[in-house]
Length: 78
Image (cartoon, rainbow, N blue to C red; front, side, top):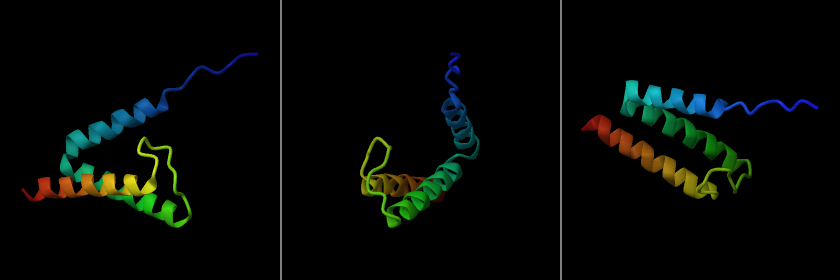
């Protein structure tokens, strides 16, 4: 039986996100933080309490994303 080789798609996605963050600076960071926050907010309201994210608890993930968003907003203002 032929097993499909591992496809490191996530690494391509990470590189693309890093490129956008590098090119667009804090605007990209703010955008991804807001997008992530909205996604986790919606998932939490639907009943998700544990995430595959390293932080596990969705409340911690929301706090983390909010902090990133605030830091990006501060960088844009300053």
